[in-house]
Length: 496
Image (cartoon, rainbow, N blue to C red; front, side, top):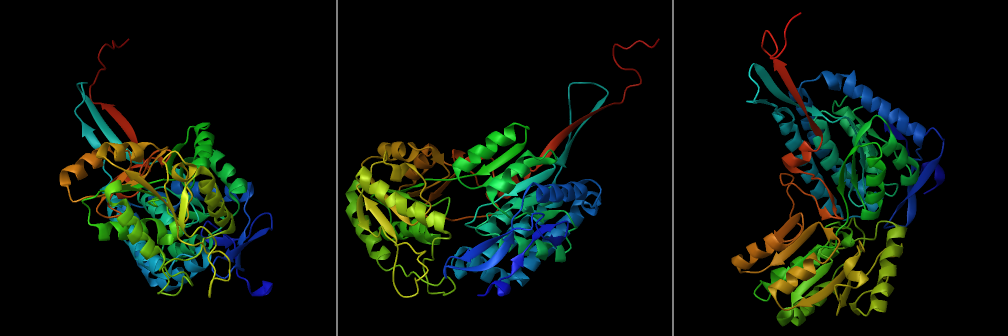
């Protein structure tokens, strides 16, 4: 594609596309073809100032501030409908931008439309209360109010999903948002802001600033008119943002990394468990925060499970993510590809046994060089780096255990606590394990099953706060306490 045919995408600020103040642009590449396909604006502090000012005005003096909650809900419902109307175009752009499978993205967009519909329905269900307090002649009320301007910093692996689960509840709560997508996958966030505007969202309510994280993120987090940061990404970056936000006492929610245990007991349905293990790590090429990257298998069935997983892994079809027959697409960007490759040597050095994959995938249709073989390590100890650190790629570590207690210890002996899977037919054991596992989400006899009605969030270094469900909207609300005296004379007060 020649330079003059490459589309350029400016920031989206106050209901319009605007060029970067610096005049500089960033090239973004198609991970399947390995070629530049678009340019995005390279943002900086001046662009951030414009976007935050637009968001603040929308919340304080604009139409958004004057609308009833029901009116806001109707607009969110129109955004949901517009998502479905634009599903073909958004699907193609998202595949182009981050290399996910066309079927996953199309199905995900239906899910995301439901997210917008769900929060549209919650918009006018936000209620305060009247409290019977211990003071006579006093009317005590609570109001629920939007927390303020929200900065939403999203990751590259599922940009439209993160936009929905952050922006839909924030807007339902009455907030305005400035989104900073990853520089590796920005285009669909910009396109979605345009779609939302066409659906009737007032100017300034949803703004998108593109650019490098180091050049946009700090200005956004430090901005005095930003009240809250919601972030999805690595635990390392999350810790830096958390520390920075604390200096100005900003509210934060963090959806960070994971190293989730997927635990198979000997009495499990082994066919279902093996399929769930493969889906849990090789789906989206392992580029999921909930990836079941630690497969804990009871030693009595470890050999059998390993055999079944190997049989599936050997037949995973890699290729064009727009091809419905493709089962695993490319790694989304080169830095992530290099990170995955580096962990192969780390695991070998620590003594893990590579039994499948472990190198860049080659073959017809894989010419971009961004594909990685489904990779499996056996003889993994839980203290190895491959078992303790998030790889974010199609790399599975198999760890054996003998007893329920040992499985619990291994599962929880980690700095992360995002998700876990348990495979057993014994419901007593299932309940014991669910209670014992230190994770925000636990799946039983399934894996990667999501509902926008269920709260989602991690523990330990996997994050703070909740997304999705009613709890996901509560994060964007603040409670105001109001006490009004109905007495003619205040107790203890003697008029002069």
